[in-house]
Length: 299
Ligand code: NAD
Image (cartoon, helix red, strand yellow):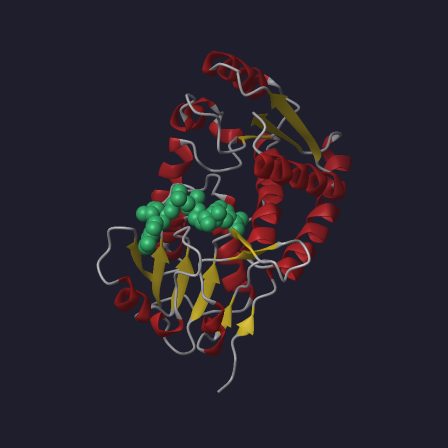
């Protein structure tokens, strides 16, 4: 029995970032300034610090001006609001996001509404959520955008396919379901979640299964139809004394699924790197739209 083709998200992301780098060089010459992304980081969450540093480095490599506004955990919602409004007004900034999670006491829903939808590169502003739901161009969350790009890269047939998305978060599950069911992608989508009955049976129907439940190795080999495409969005650090770093990353999908699936995105090296590439792409898309240029991109 043949094993799944492993979808090399890391390699694909690298290719996309290089292409984007060339595009940025051209755009910079044309417009006279580079695309720019500002990330607001509130507090000292160690994982967030790593994510933000990675975003900063990725911007630099692509020729995008990346800036991080580091605010102490004690910053009030009012102060964050003022900073967001200031960056909204700054004509030299194209993309703005607040790294999640934010400290207790700050409402992420309020933050989402404060960001100018034209600069909302995480695609979480209600306006962008609504545009995606209506099939109109806006800014689309990076992780589902990356997942769609992986399917396209491998020519996975989506029209008429049965897709199951596990998880209904605003940042992954819901926009993934919206993208898969959009005109032109045309999958028949089931959005499953923590209250869904008999997940295994639902998953077994899937030609395309996107696992974003945030539960380590939830998806078992007998949940997967032979030959199905499985995208593993989950990221979990688990202790492993045999690993040189004492811990390793696992996803929402059990490694045994490799024996059953047709295509499988690995963790690490799958969806994660694609998410960063899509963040850069969304920043360039926002830049182009703000400058009245053809956006290209997927959003
Ligand atoms: P979340 O916690 O906001 O949402 C999880 C969703 O899964 C919820 O809608 C919940 O109803 C559902 N769920 C929980 N338990 C379930 C179960 N047993 N069965 C079915 N559904 C269940 O998480 P999120 O922000 O959407 O992230 C999901 C996972 O993806 C996490 O592991 C996160 O670390 C990872 N993630 C990865 C990337 C990336 O770039 N690779 C980006 C974002 C999130």
